Length: 276
Image (cartoon, rainbow, N blue to C red; front, side, top):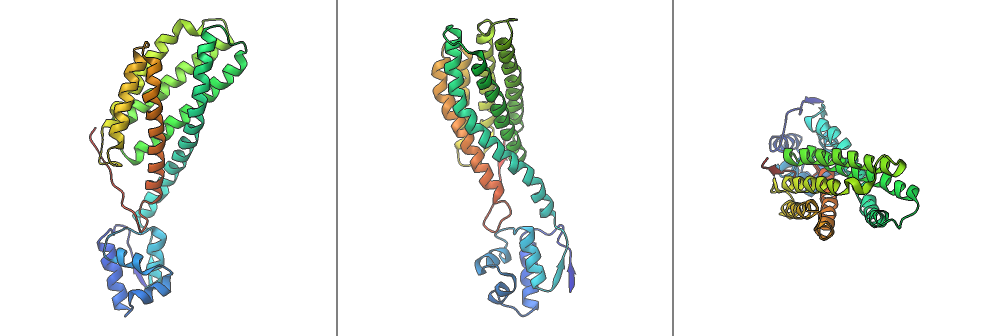
């Protein structure tokens, strides 16, 4: 067997090398298919340099062509993408739970401040659920920015994560003790979240050429909802763009999961640009 080191070999060099090796063996693409259990279209696209195959596909091709295969740079990249993909799934699942919990929380907050809500334990459980699920949702989005770099959005998400931790911890303390009441700081809390949502919206606007113009739409929704929530008086109206904003974030996580999951597969292309 011939030893082939493809550690730094990229497309189209990799495809040309596979094509040369196949011809040197006197094999047609159809005959190579029978040796490595791939389809003809995949081999055609790999040899043409149109796609970058996964590491196990490269290994199968090289072994079928009588060459040993050494670990590639792509294998390292794939191992790095697995934790990110896991966090995206966690973020998406947590975001769905948070989305429904948040509406229970809002109605409970209104009843609590009107003095018509009697059981602080139920309210506290909902608050704790929102604290955990929203934090995981935001952290999933932070992990997304490691795959699709956007420094401004990443900072904005960390600001939101910290604000969420602080204010919901204060909420839980106010429900468990008589140190202070929720109505004493509620408007400050709203204004803080308004600023954080506006900052996140500005971060999404920094994405360019990523999933059409969806990030720009999200950015606009985030800024509008942030302004309305910050104003306090328009907070209830801000729930409309905020709902669309958070649904859009869930959609973006689905897109990122699909995109990263197909990265380096025979049918994928993977690129994004940001201005930040």
